[in-house]
Length: 331
Image (tube, rainbow, N blue to C red; front, top):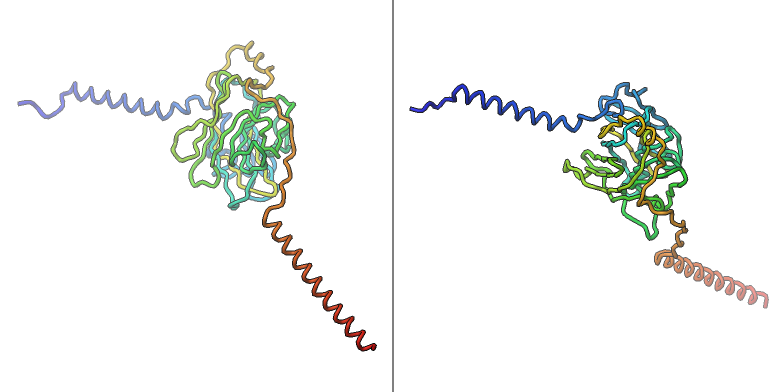
């Protein structure tokens, strides 16, 4: 009669098989963080929350809590920024950002925030709270549309700008005059986590999003032949004006895809001027044609005109009748 129990060899085989499965499972879950550099990353719990953050400086309205880093509150005319203190000496890298943009506004809100890889850090300015005419890369998550011309697109909108220090970001055109690439992204006021990935590998810039609660990356855009030097700083900044929103950073994870070991290559990469082959030449800035009056405005102007005319006629008749009565009394 065949025994229903496993033999010793079979038991050992199954034990080894389960052990291998566990190891593979462990590798699957830990591989994503294998090359994450803690000194360049920012994850909960934020050590020194409230006053200081190791390797990071923050300015303006930035508030560090135990659950998020708020660049701006949902209050008008606020600006905040956070910048890493150490320059990035990695040629190929990836940044994954967990963020949240929220606010009380239903129709009007703004303005958005920017993720930076730039030469100059902690310099306040008009580009979502940071310096204009910057050198480096800006990934802009714009929530308010200032542009009503032929290059209009829906908002929120994610775009990239490569700058060698000679270009100005044009808020009135939502940066379309100097935009590298972009995509629409509905990330505001959602009740789940929103993520953006910025990968720079072999001079190819790839931006992906996970903003639909599907736990999978969706390509926003890819741009080849983008040249970025080593030695720049990572940061994020946000601003509010007449409109406002909460702009929160939940985590900032930096991955070193391929470290530079050659000192000669390192020095060469440090001297690169930021550029992109597909970058469009700045287009001439033309003011929007002022729109004519709407039908509603025209209607109210006509109505007001008629009311004024009727009132004048009534006053004229009353004045005429009074004058007529006065003349009768005199005679």
